[in-house]
Image (cartoon, rainbow, N blue to C red; front, top):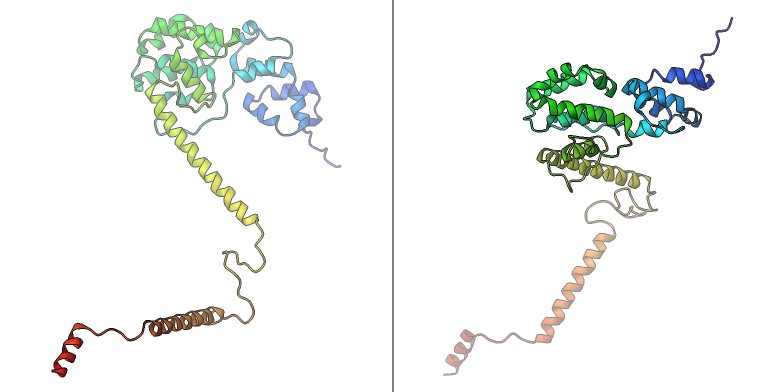
Length: 306
């Protein structure tokens, strides 16, 4: 008895497909949409994106998000990060959370007015591992949040920032983190650099971010230069060689032309040039006449006459 053919994603009905994809991450679903047109059309389902948003940011999404019908895909994509950047040798806290804009905003807000040392990093890591989503932050007891934030200093101010970012991340149509309370220019610049991949030094005031951008822009220049070199090599490889021309650009030797030194038409050319130079020299001597006598010769002639 022949075994049944394996069922593919395209063979599933829409409800089953949504059920399967709801267990995948948002990044995997976005990558799957690039596989073919059928899957891309299937992934436009509004219910699928709402389930993915709830899976990523918790049950408060359904309560706080104000999304028009058919707008869950755009709402979810706006709250995702772009492709990850390579980790720099600067060892910045922002690089650890660049894949999740919500955690990135909180990490930047918590880093403000701190030394960024091991104690600060440990407190940030403990907070985001314990309450990784906006729903978890909003549902957590504030006493526990304050206890974790206390090593950072200004715990009540940082708690207010965490609650405001968690609520605004889901409930408002924000465009920039500076719209949230306690999130200033540093958080905004860091968000655009690490989560939106804006690599421009203009307007960035923080020195650490400036160092990162200089490092990143240097990498971009090297990548562009390597890409240009690869394109040039590919263009030369695809360009057909001209008739009678070697790949190195030299003229191919014709029949009867020798390859040794001093043979072939090159030797004849040199001989003709040497003969022409000798003839020109002889003509010049004949036109100039006899050479004039020197001072010693004139004195000897007068002595003989006397």
